[in-house]
Length: 427
Image (cartoon, rainbow, N blue to C red):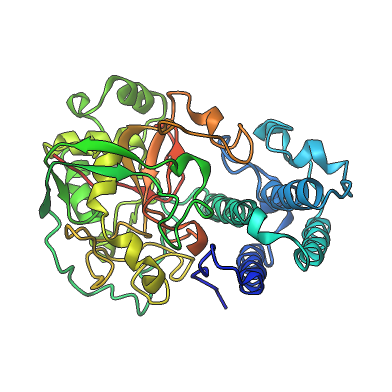
């Protein structure tokens, strides 16, 4: 069972809070373990791409982080695996040096041992004072679980054109979207609060990670936003028109990237069955590819603030939506699904598919909100405020439900295309 909605975290009923944390920890872990069931030693230990650590490192890092912050930091227990500190700490070894890993059984034993002691501590832990750290830990595992998904996809489909299989039966593949792909909605100019408020119910400061806060006023000028993410059918026209060979559509850095890594299609492109995926969002494009397409159609990428404003209304709907099949997340289908079909998961402005399916690039650099305070340590978000990472919003089909919300800010460098990422345009 996946426990999708937390109780009121300000409630005095600590028993209810304790049950929520225990249930969520277990459900999240079940999903992580299901990903690596039957994994081979090569996939466990080898790098699939220089930008990503091996699957086994992510498993060890999940356990190490739980031990560090819950058992050492909160429970004041000594580290039981000191030899793992350098290997699995985020700042211990460079990604290229993370392949000398324990066997899968040893990694699973590490996860079990840490979790057993965590649950023992949870029985008497003062959760009212600690809940933010527990929530952060759950979301930390969600993030690494999604990274495991993409690393395994890269391994599984190396040498093939795409990791997309045939359209999934029962996912409404033959249904036409309720909106035309080219339709746009009007977003009125106004001031609004960007970020997470301290008292916004289930998505309060205890749930948000540090870079989502604090909420602050921003001004957004009137603009238009695509109702749905750019589809494979739309993107195919860019490819057919020679978009990957035409310099005029690419920014300088993007054209330089394209010359160094010559590609002619998205990473996750349905090479032999494009028509079957024509209503799916394009997936596996980097920021350079997204901006090139936007220029091709006379549009641009939305800013982070524009995207956030366009998503208005989804936060309040989210707890209910996560109990339905309206959002393609949490490996429900195992790949992308047609866009523009949801009847309830629509923003107040009429935008579809802003949660799940594919992460969406924005035009904004990943930067701290005014008054930002690092949590639980400076290196979690702060080191990426370097002017080299762009913001993505919305989540993907592999995003776990505890890390899925409109306010969540993902961040990657513009050249990265391995994540399950797409985009929508604005103008």
